[in-house]
Length: 339
Figure (cartoon, rainbow, N blue to C red):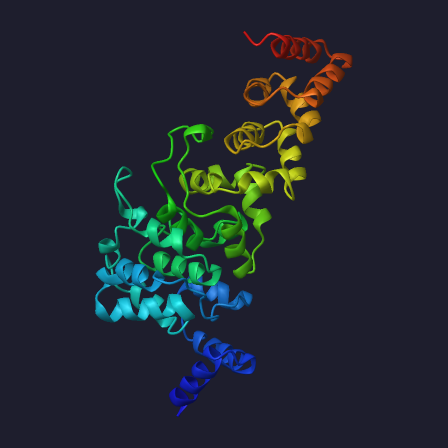
């Protein structure tokens, strides 16, 4: 009887009935209470809307089916239903209970860094944030980030949930560089930054926590050994616009830090070609401190000439410390004659 009622709700919801959609979401939420997979439970208890039917573009179901096919007919069909509309979250428990079941998917977590990764094609086409979130849970359940290396709670506090780490590895275009600050040759990412923010919003998380971790304003990246997935996320197209816009104040804070946040912020600004004049005062401060001079100067030298930067550096000539004045003179001389 309950199955028939659900089928009626599904038909009405598919026809656009808002009351049916709400009732179907509530019914599936009650069903979701029985799933025990940790990533699912965390999202379910936070009130994330995990049951909304995905808005899929034509052909995406074929990509999804091909991606999940190595799981076998039963698990693949269940996982695809879950990704598409949130039905049967218990499939996550089934996937997690099958050691090695994800090996056939060639997930980035299991692959040679130089190999091609099929999930990239799917992630490039799958734009619905709730469906992507559910796919991240599937990848996580398939043995994704090892719990001992990527413990869930510290990751959440750092703004990087385990399902996002799994998606980041699958979204990687090529191997990340050995130097975590060298973003000029960093891994590419098929997920855009607006998509990542939409994912975090669907999970009832904010994008600022992840941005803080990317800027190294805390020690989570080093402590949790998150260099590789964070390099992938730092390469998301569209991050530059966010840095120059709503996160500009966070970038200024990072530039004024004494630690590795300066190098990270400068690398992100350069990597994404962000216009530097809005950050002129903070960059001038960083460029005239011995510990951050090299990184800040590299960012300044890589950008087009700017009257705002020249003016900000000239103000540093009035500083009381001789070392600051000396570095300001050096920067100004290089700006005048970059040879």
